[in-house]
Image 1 (spheres, one colour):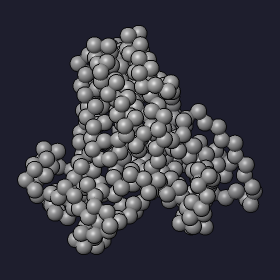
Image 2: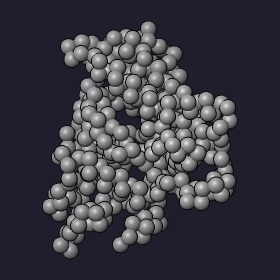
Image 3: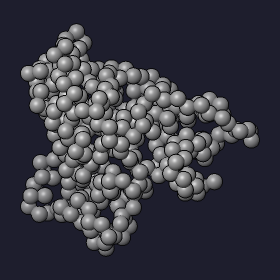
Image 4: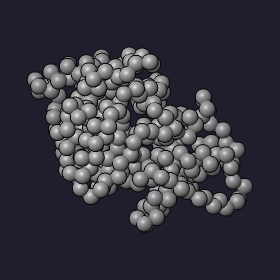
Length: 360
C-alpha cells in the first residue's frame, strides 16, 4: 500500500477521514521501520483530552500516542536519545503523506519531547532540539478557545501560505545563490530583506503561472503544490518565518537570562508580550487570522500590563482556534483573563499551564 493510495482512501469519507491520523501511523511504521503485526488485527482505544480543531496540536497528540503504542506492540525501537525526535518525524510523515495535511514538525516534536513548565526550543528546518527553556516564576500562560474550528489540510489557507513561503525561499535562493539560503530561518539579516522589498528587488506577489515559468523545477516543497491560477502573497508569507525566527530567538534568550531563583521582571514580560502581539499581526497579514482570535487578542491588549496582561497571539494553523495569553501570576491578572472571557461571550474554554510530552 502506497502513501498516495492510503491518502486517497481515507479522503473518500469526510466523517472518517480523521482515522488517517491513527491508522496511518501503522502504515508509516511498516514502510519506514519494517514493523510487522504478524497478520493480527489491531483494536485501538484512543482517549484524548486535547480539544480537536483548536490549534493546540490535537492531531499531533493522537499521532504520537498511536504510533508509540503500535511501536511497542510491534517491538520497533526509535533511533536517538529516547527516540523522541524520530517518533515525531515519523508522525509528521503520517500527517503529510497519509492525512494530507502540509504541517511542519513542531507539533509532533512538542507532543513527543515537551516538558511540563518548559518551552521547547526547536529548529524545524533540520528537526534539531536546542533545549528546553524554563518558564520563570512570576508569569503564566493561558489558552482561550475562540470556539472557531480550523484546519491544516492541503486545501486550507495554511497550505497556501506554506506554498507561498517556499516560493519566496526558492526565489531568494535562485536570485542570490552566493548567500546559500537553504531555509528561511537561516536567511540574511531581516533588515537586508526589508531593504530588498522596499527597493523592488524582491516581488511582493507572484502568480503560480509566472513562478513556474521562471522555475520549472518548482518550489522545493513536496507537501504543497503550486496552482498556476493563484497569485501568491510571497513577500508577506515568506517574511513571516524570517521575522518569527528572530522573535523566538530573542524570547528564548531573554527567558534564559532569568536566574532559577529569580522572578521574571516586568521588562522581560513586556518584551516577550510585544513580540507575541507582533507575531499575531504577522500571522494575520499572511491570511491566517480570524475575527474571533483578533477579538480575544484585542480584549487582552485592552487590559494591558497594568492588569498583568502582557501579550497574546493566535496559535496553531490559524483561521480560528486558541489565543495564547501571557500574564503575570497574580490574582488581578487571572481576573483580567476572566473578564476577557466574559466580554468575548459564549463561555470559552480556558487552558492553563502545560504538560509533559510522550517521552519526557
